[in-house]
Image (cartoon, rainbow, N blue to C red; front, side, top):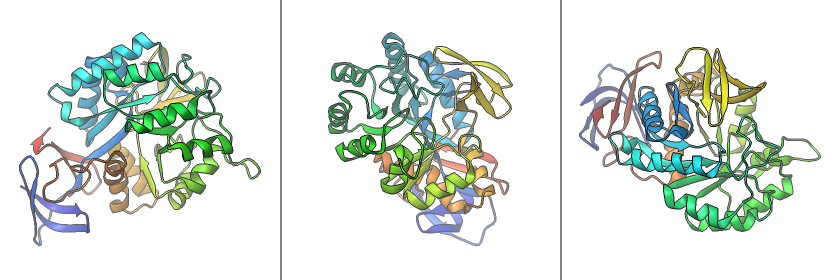
Length: 354
């Protein structure tokens, strides 16, 4: 049982939260105590604490442990573009970790590449592939791929997209040099969202709206990185006005939580300097954690309730997870407890304190 200010589907209430593995009851009462929020769900995370998911099971479990400490009770282990044998190792490691002690916090895989544009790699290693149904089917057989980032202008991309969508994979447009028309065709073919909106995609111009323009005009879902480096807070607020299902991700890499220095990003070595991670002058993922994302959003003027929902409820809805993302009877007791300064005091995964 916990006492405090509880975020329920109808808003904050003061009271007592009764739970075991799942939420049992919310008892309203005039008590004092910390904020009790649904555990955060991060749908784009490469690593943390010095290791990354490309490193196999050890890297996946290290990533889970690190982000759990910051309130993330569910994440998509996110790959980078790599030769197929390295992707196989990563996916098999993710599959193994799902059966491990922290497996309930592992929601599946976000394949960020290899089906992306060689002209919009950003900090991705230089191993892009053209869309290929046989390769996709093989990758999907290795681990549960929930999200895939695709450059829709590549040859065969629309048939590839339809193939994935029929299998329940949410295809996001990203790392793309697509025109507005090419991106629009992908949206009509079943694309679900946009990967790290604004970054590594064609920007908004008044005569050529690009992928960003399409997202702002017609997007239902998109992820964005609220670290203050990848996107200016004003651009983030513009996206909030335009995209109802805008949710927040960290895009955290191995350098998250570590001192300044060099760390792996797939085949690359990237440099952490302060709060940023860089590769040859380009941002290379982030050091963000979900609790810091929450603090950033509140500091930029977003109400705590909305910020928390866009870190938990909306990503759960996007993935179709009916038992996560809200504090309501019957749902998993995945919880983060925060003090008045929004610092993590405790994390519960399936009712057990982490």
